[in-house]
Length: 76
Image (tube, rainbow, N blue to C red):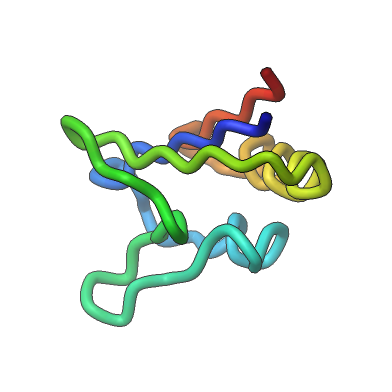
C-alpha cells in the first residue's frame, strides 16, 4: 500500500508535484496551493492511501522535488 501525505498549509505553489505526479496532485485555482487528490484531511495533513503500487515512483519523485519538503510517500 502506498501512503501519501501532504502538509498543504506550508505549500508555496511551485507546481513540481503536479508536473511529476499529475494523477495524484493538482493546483488549486482558489489559492494556488497543491491539492492531494482523493485525500482525507486531519489536523492540516492530507493523506491518501492506495493499493496501486504504480503511483509510488511518481509520487516519491514529487516528494523529493518539493522545495519545502511537505510531501511524504511511504510504501507500507
